[in-house]
Structures are given as C-alpha cells and as structure tokens.
Amino acid sequence: MNLDDTIAAPATIPGTGAITVIRISGPDTFTAVDKVVEFTSGNASSAEGYTIKFGIFKDKDGSPLDEVLVSIFKAPHSYTGEDSAEISCHASPYIASRIMEILGENGVRAASPGEFTRRAFVSGKMDLAQAESVADLIASQGEASHRIAMNQLRGGFSKELREMRSELLDVASLMELELDFSEEDVEFANRDRFMKLLESILDHLEKLIQSFRKGNAIRNGIPVAIVGPANAGKSTLLNTILGEERAIVSEVEGTTRDTIEETITIDGILLRFIDTAGIRSTDESIEKKGIERTYKKIEEADLILCILDASLPYADPIPEAVQTVIERANPEYQKLIFILNKVDKLADNKNVSEFNKFVSYVESQTQYSKEKAECLQISAKEGFGIKNLSSVISDYCKSISSEDSGTLVTNLRHLQALTSARDSLLNVKGGINSDLSTELVAEDIRESIRHLSEITEPISDWELLGNIFSRFCIGK
Image 1 (spheres, one colour):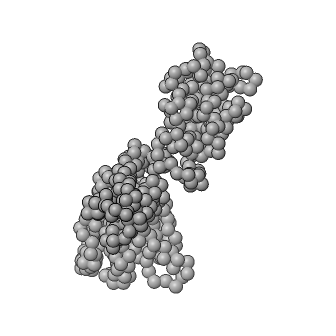
Image 2 (cartoon, rainbow, N blue to C red):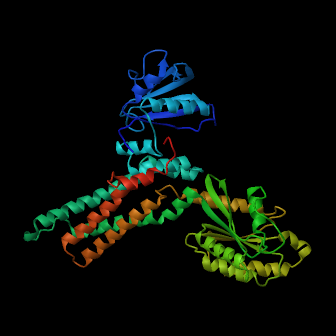
Image 3 (cartoon, one colour):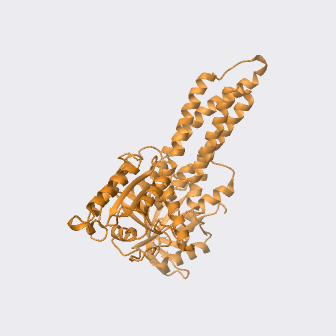
C-alpha cells in the first residue's frame, strides 16, 4: 500500500439506489478528474473547495458515458486531509465499473479496504481510536450502538485517555529529573500526591475495563438466552417474539439440539435472542453437546429468559432446571426472568395449588434483587402475557440505554491496552509502597503511558495498522 498514490473506490453500492458515489483521494485527484470529465465551465483543478461542478464523464473513445456531479475538497480540508473529489453518477453497475476502469487508466489506483480512513489517520485528521469508530458507526444497527460510536468518533474516549496520559507524563518527567540529581537525594515528585493521582487513574481505568462487557454487548447486540427444560415452550416463545416461524416447534422433547440465534431491535438496542437446547438428563450424545452449549449461553448472556412449563406438577425436572440456571447466572451483571409458560392449560383452577407451589419455589430460590429478577406468567402459544414480557424487556433496554451516558469500551484491542496500562500502574503502586528505586518505578510509569498511547497515537507497527484497517469496507 503506497500512501502517495491517488486512489478511488465506490463509496456506495452500485445498483441499489438512484446514484453511485465514487470517491477519489490523493495528490493527482484533480488532474485525473480533469482528464475524464468535461465540465460546462472551468475545471476541477482551479475550482474552490466545497463546491460541486456539473460535467460529462467521457468514455474511452470520447463519447459521453454519463452526466455527473463532482464534489471538490481541497487539502487539508477533506476527510483524508488530501485533495479529494466525489463523482456522483447514475447507479448503474456498468457505469460505475467503467468509471473505475477509466480512472485506473489515468493513474488512479483502486483503494484497499479502509484506505481512505487510514490516510485520514496518517494525516492527523483523527487518532486511531476515532478511526476505528468509523467502522463501528457504519456497522451500528441501533440507536445505542450509534451513540457510542459517535461519542468515540467525536473524540470523547480519546480525550479521557489524553488527560490520563498527560498526568502520568508530568509525573514521569519529574521522576526522570530526580534521576539526574540522584546523588543529591532530591525528590521532585511528591509521593503522597502521586499516590492520590495513581488511585484516581486506576479507578478510571477499572471503570473503563468493566464497561467493556456492556459496550461490546451494545455494539454487537445484547445476548438474550432462552433456556429451560425440554418442551417448556422455548422455541414457541422465540417465534412469538420474532413474529415468524424461525424455530421448529414439536411436542417431542429435545427437538432443539443446537442454538438458534436471531436479532431484533427494541428501543434502539439490538438484541440477539438465542434459543437453546432443553435442560434435562440425557444419554444421547448430540443432545448432550447441545445442553453443554446451553450452559455456556447462560454464562455469556446479559438477559436470561428461563422458560418453565407451568402446567406440569411441581416436581423434577422443574427444580433441577431452576437450580441449574441460578447456579450458572451472575446477579452482578445479568438480568434473570423466570417465565411460567402454558398457563392457558390451568383453566378451571386445574393444578392451582401445584402452580402456587411452583411460583413460590421459583421466587424463593433466586437470590437476585427485584431489579435483577422477575417471575412472569405467559402462554407463548396463545399470546397471553407476551405484552407484559415485551414491556419488561423494553424496560431493561431503556435501563441499558440510560446507563451508557459515559464512555463505554467496545473494542477488544482497547480493552487489552487498558488492562496492560492498569497492570503497569499496579506495579507502580506496589513499587512505591515497597520503596522501590525511582528508576524502576519510572519505567513502569513509562510502560503504562505506552499502553495508553497504543489506543490513540500514531504507532510504527504497520502490521497492526494493516490488520485494523483491512476490516473496513471498500470506499471507507
């Protein structure tokens, strides 16, 4: 990848709308445009930035290929920081491919995935964290994930990192000064004041690290595990929520052998509903593997819907299933909803006493708070109670959305760098408490600064940059 080349790529998908936009960036942008577009007046090279010119894009033989609008962006006031142009043509795949072919014959290379954003990063238009947020913004499928990506793109996360880095740099500089005067036993960096600063930064880093679970869930979709005994109505509930026959429903136990996953957006948040194999004792090897995956999904989910067949007598496998879910769930960060299904079969007070035992047992077994666990009654088949369940899920989504006003970490690379920075600062804290030499403490501070810098600042690891930007779409 030569960043001195002039590059081009479709920024939209040809054939899916009224127009296609082809983006061009690099030192020879306007020279190339003037070779292939005949403007009604003037040319691209002499045009002012932030203007749009009408012209005819010429085919190889000089005949008109299409009427186009060319948007002009002069360096450094463009997305990439270079001279750039965007050609808006009709959304014919043929026209778009011919324009790219003709531009190629005039010295313009086809862009690699993410190359425009990589150039914006290299030219200082955005830091690395902001550049990565561009891909998140494009991929956002709900209001919450969009808001997180926009906050990062606007530099909110980067600002927090710069402030921490600046404070650590000040201390590191003072410690370096101490090393220059080591023979005079002078202390420039007040240790008590530094320890207070250290505690503050460690607390900030810990909050960012802990935010990753929620941030990653909002970015990729909050996992909702639908679990419970075999034949309790899990697949029927999934189909009811989705409004379509997505999962196979059968009276035969053990129909679902593997997880089935579908997504839906509620209150601006993407949810990933996962139908799982029924929890029960079995010797069938394939079903056993499915149940093991169920256990894993319980641990990974943020919201757990435990479906129980309320029409059955209060006996195994109900208590066993409830205990299994409770033992594997974590009340610190998981919401648990016990759903008593098939209440339509309790007509004429049939099994009412058994049912009351059922409700009492479920409510007594959970150690969750009211905010973290609820017990609802529904009939997934008849639709009874579904509106109430949807309301509870909606309230959960709103609570998640209202809590993301601060910075949420969504990127695994950022999490790893933050964790390494925290660990280095914990070494600093331990070193100061044990009167470690200034030289060794200063090295741990420098190490933490390096880890924070990995997230936002230009680095020389071109392989890492190539890996990051290769995940972008063509044209961005």
